[in-house]
Amino acid sequence: MSTLAFIVSLAVSGLIFGALARLLLPGRDPMTIFQTMMIGIAGSLVAGLVAYYAFDRKEGPGFLMALLFTILLVYAVRKIRERSATGIDRRV
Image 1: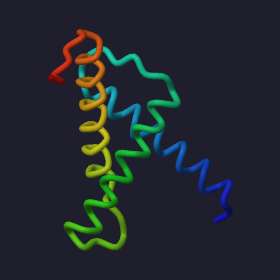
Image 2 (image 1 turned 90 degrees about the vertical axis):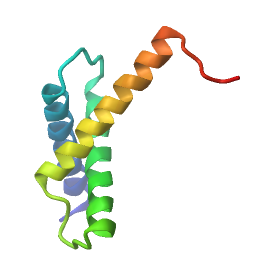
Image 3 (image 1 turned 180 degrees about the horizontal axis):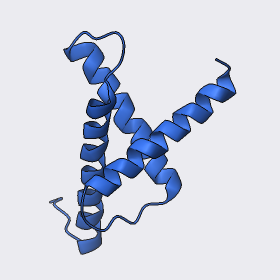
């Protein structure tokens, strides 16, 4: 597989995972398409690392595990944005 084909397939899969995660997690989510794609790629990467190190799987995390970690990342981004929008700062 060429480098360009790999980058395009990575972007498309990230967009699919990010969009599915945003659809499955109810609530308002003001993200751009690029941010959705990056969240999907990051979720797949984290799922791959967990599958590799925790479960000793060499072939990859699988669809459901990657989607679960992407949903967790969307939830985390949403909570961080809510905290910064309300002006709550926990620094002393």
